[in-house]
Image (cartoon, rainbow, N blue to C red; front, side):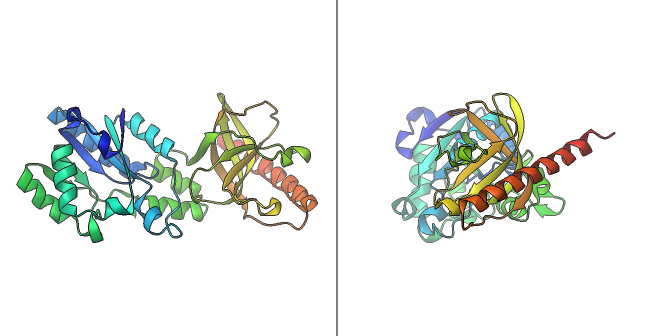
Amino acid sequence: MELIRGLHNIRAQHKSCVLTIGKFDGVHLGHKAVLSSLIAKAKSLGLPSTVMVFEPQPEEVFSPDNAPARLSRWRDKYEALKDIGIDRLICVHFTAKFASQSPEHFIEHTLVNALGVKFLVVGDDFRFGQARRGDFTMLKAAGHEHGFSVVNTASFRHDDCRISSTAIREALANNQFTLANEMLGREFTINGRVVHGQAKGRTIGFPTANVNLQRAKAPIVGVFAVQAECQGLRLDGVANIGTRPTVDGHQGLLEVHLFDFDQDIYGQYLRVSLQHKLRGIKKFDTFAQLQTQIAEDAQQARNLLAESSSAQTKP
């Protein structure tokens, strides 16, 4: 998959494509249904399938405090789109200046002149341009004028629930991990490379593998029984997701204590899936109280994971 960083890097060879525009946060089953249709249409026309996304996402520019938590990091999105078989990914740097352009300017200069779009797929709630004046009706009219087709993505439903990134966030917030996984079409995971931390856990017998969340806010916070994949191994553990108020933490972090594992994995890629929520984030008065609670969390996680494993192996 070719990655084009910024509209200024679009070249003559990128003209003529089948395009969809969206956030694609989590790249869930609803997204995959749209993208599969996009790829099929692109192949039928002999054109590259192209996805346009914005970084940062518009809500993160205009209302950062109220912007929804991201289900996935940029790298996760890139890898998912690549695995699906998208030919080109255009990442547009989103700013207030970019958003202030008229929708007519975006259509003429970006869709028509730069990309030469032949077929466009957008969501039923897609709005764009200054004051969000651009919409599906405007795109349809522009397509008729400039010679490209525009289709609306139908809502993709699962058990009478519209599959959306919002619905997945709600499922995660309600500890409905199975439902979230079903809508995603895979396990919800938090991924990243293991970085050095303060090593406080090691001093009390609970060393942790630390992963920066790389997002303004996490879609889920608390303490969880988890399973982690690293170096081809699947390991049980207990994890804290969020800030660490007892040690004056402010940055969002994933901290995983892996059971019966003592290898050096700094710099290694870690993929962590949530199995059970144990409790919320809590600030303890003393480090000794935190140590006691971590021991209880670890034992509870071991018990729950053992029960789950036993249930899965029963005939």
